Every structure is written in structure tokens, then in C-alpha cells.
Image 1 (cartoon, helix red, strand yellow):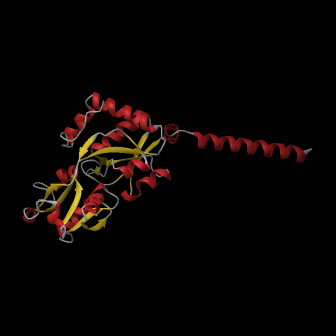
Image 2: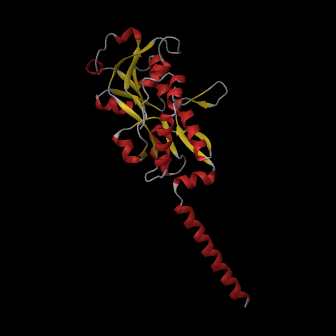
Image 3: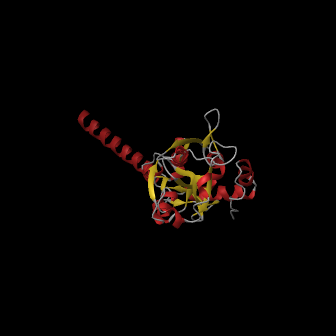
Amino acid sequence: MKKVLALIFAALMMVGCLAGCGNNADKTDVEYIKDKGTLVVGMTDFAPMDYKDANGNWIGFDADLAKGFAKELGVEVQFVEITWGQKANELKTKNIDIVWNGMTLTDDVKAQMDCSVPYCRNAQVVVMKKDKAANYKDAASMKDLQFAVENGSAGEDMATENGFKITEVDKQAKALMEVASGTCDAAIIDMLMAGAMIGEGTDYADLTYSIELNSEEYGIGMRQGSDLVEKLNTYLKAASADGTIAKLAETYKISDNVMEIK
């Protein structure tokens, strides 16, 4: 009798476990995030979108928007620095829940993840030392230069498209360091970042950007099939309508780049 009862109890435990596991597997992204209580944002150090203040806290146009979205979901926000070229894998393995870091909406990006509506305009620009910029008026004149580019970035795509010689780094900020030190002749980075980090009054006063290689739009990436997309788009539309986005854009000096979201 005891053996029979033990077998029945074991069977019930197995059924309960399978049911529980099934429930976890069936959870939507929004349910999963709310249950764990955190929205994990994958990003890189990229002023003015995501960067640390004097106290080591993440701030920036994207960071502040992400904080507001987490509040809307009723969860805490957690920022995790990632290797940009691995952003899609980070989403798939659930190391992060969302990629929010001035991400260009390329065909490759849209094939690997579901994305929000566009919210910012941008371009990839060539950065070099001021005393050399006058010698390079177009991409054709730059074929012999060595370019620093962030691995997996839109800047790398532009370098490849133009047949440039490249040195890959893991952050756009490091691409600027390569140019400043003379290790590379030029870098290709986001126009928004160039506006914030080079020129008079910055640590790179001797750098400038010479030409724009393209025009593009920023979006926010989530797992394929995620119900988080609808939630985020609704949040972005509301933040655009109530002036939140415009106010943040003014704070971080990117007012000319933000898009109206309807």
C-alpha cells in the first residue's frame, strides 16, 4: 500500500512539475519581465544615448526613456553593457530583454529581432583630425585610409560598402581613441555621438566629422514575436505626444534628430 501511495505521489509531483514548466514556457515576454521584476536593457557606452554620470549611474536620452518604460511596466530597470555584434544572441538567450542604444534599423537588424517604430534620425559620419579633413571631400578620396569601426555596427557596414580598410573595436568610443592616438586615420561613427563627443569643449577638440555616408533611423530591438513591441510602441507614442521625448531631446541636445511618433 505504501509503495502504491508513493508511486501516486511521485506521479502527481511529476504532473505538477510539467504543468509548472509548461506555464513558464508559455509566458509572454511582458509576463516574463513582470514576474522577474526587471527590464534588462542591453546597451553600450554611447553618449548622448547611454553613458554614466559622475556617480556611475546610467543616463542619456535612451537610458532615461528606458527608465520611463520600465516604470510603465511596473518593474525596475537594469542596464547591461553588451558586445554590440552579439546583441541578437543576447536577446535570444534572454541575457537581456531589449536593445536600447541608438540602434540603426538595418535590414540585418530587422531580420534578427522585432523592432519598435523609428524614433530618431541619424547618419554615419567620417571622423578625422581637423588638420586633415580638408584633404578628403568624399568617400572616393578616402580609399587609402585606415578606418576604426565598432564591430557589428552600421559604421562597419558603411566601411564595407565603400571598400574601406578597417580596424574593428568593441565600442564607438574606442574608434575615436584610435583616431586621436593616430593608430587609425579616421573612424565611422553615429552623427549623434559625433555631435556630443568631438569638437570644441570636448576631450576630442582636434577631431571633426567631414562627410555623411548615409541617412538612417534608430529603433529599439526585442525578441522575435515579443508582445513587448506593442507595449513599447504605445509608450513611445505617448511620450512623443506629452512632450517627454522633446524635453529629453533638449536636455541631451539632439532636438534636431528626434522624430514625431504618431
